[in-house]
Image 1 (cartoon, rainbow, N blue to C red):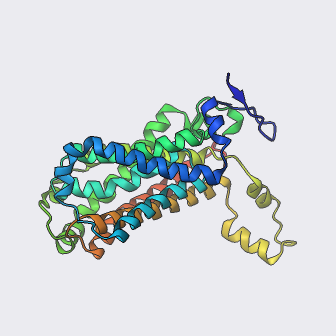
Image 2 (image 1 turned 60 degrees about the vertical axis):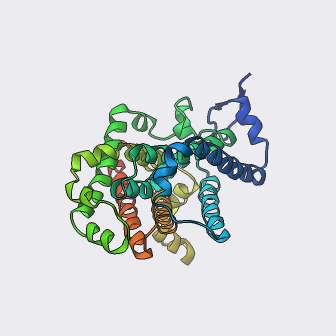
Length: 334
């Protein structure tokens, strides 16, 4: 049997599977530790399966983590990433997209400049994405924005976010932004930065021979993830109480606090969602890239890791800004 939940404000109910309904009977404080446990367990299982295939590649460029606090720090950061997704009310597609965008840069560094096989990088990235997607998919239902069967009334601009040409255009647009930022960095300051602050680089020629069309093509998965994490939730966001307060704001009768709030955060739900998610992507992508590069890559310096992470943080910020501009057109509900 398919259960149906009554939703407020006259919105039609959304069908949900028995497995998801059962998991939702667990309290949130119980479900989140279960998410962390499932993530760590699945990671250990999946990496053990591919260890013979990837160990020689990754171990040759990895620092030896012998102190307990080093391992605890990485596990703590992983739990923090999951907490951001859980308490930020992301669904499995949201967090899988965020994971791909934030875990790709350190692996891209290893593949491009340390001679690690692309297949090893793809295996590691796939495991990281799957081990975040599966626990969230089991313990939290897909949001209406990512659910093609959700009622039209549950999502704004459904015809826009589900339009195939728009999907393709926004995916290529995001991939193009990432490609241009990386290409521009390769052609200017980044090669010297890498040589000065990364000891043991095996080959820097990729920075000088990079072709922009190839870079854009290689970043299409990142473009799709950026679309799902930024463009789709912001464009599909329904108006909320904040929008009502903004419409009712009267500068002549408003208090000082209401005036300050309106001037600082009096944006539409779509804009607020884009700002929040872009800031999250910049923070998580930047911090994870810096942490994973500095802590796990042999020979990397803190300043070098910070510079490398800055490239991807800039790409994330610019992508969010352009997506906001693209969505700010006539016909799109704000």
